Amino acid sequence: MTLSRIVVFIFILLSANLLGCTGPLKQSNISANEFYRAVRPEDLRGNIIGFLTTVVPKGNSQGEYRSLISDIIEKNFKEGQPDIGIIPSREALNRINGAELTKEYAGMLEDYEITGILDKHVLAKIGNILNVKYIAQPRLSSFVERTSTRLSAFGLSLVSTRETTVKVSLQLWDTGTGNIVWEGSGQATIAVEALRAKPVSFEEVAEAASRGLMKKFIMPSEGQTGGL
Image 1 (tube, rainbow, N blue to C red):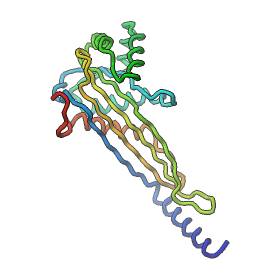
Image 2: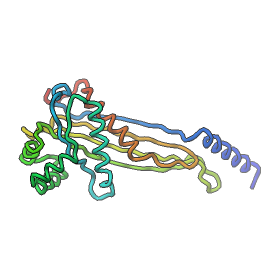
Image 3: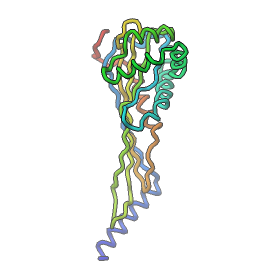
Image 4: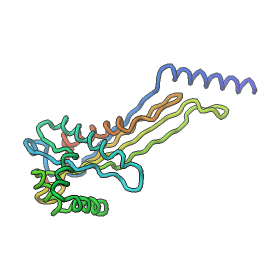
């Protein structure tokens, strides 16, 4: 090994050791968008909103996060809108099953994957069962994990970056008209850089994305059109 290579190697080791001593570096990027609004939060005060189970992309292993996303979004909704009551998705499913609407509900979600529409007639039945005017349909749009190496020497990876991105969305439907009255999305990316960086938990990133989404619901975008 030449002297220059030894110097470079020592420099990289010292840099890596410094990063290791200061702890992992964490960066986050959170964004949210409002796509449509035909109702304001103040118009919903005193109402109860029924939450359906989160829809997840087909053909992958993200189904395991369905209940977790529902819990996170419902929690953030209650914290952000304490004057609006909710029926959690688990309770909603129990009532739907108790009313023997399971097949119709499953069919509605199957069609929703293709058309992006919740069937008006089934939606009205669910609204009657839950005794609510509005139904919330959450969705896990994407979940991506990436790993990259920033410092390496002689085949040895010294500093790695683990990046996790979660995007969630929410639609609010009127069970009487079958119309969407609000739609928005939230996305969060959290990256950790360290000697042996562990991936950021799905729950932490989903929580950040959900908070961004709820802020958009609480604070209407300026100039937003769509029924107001």
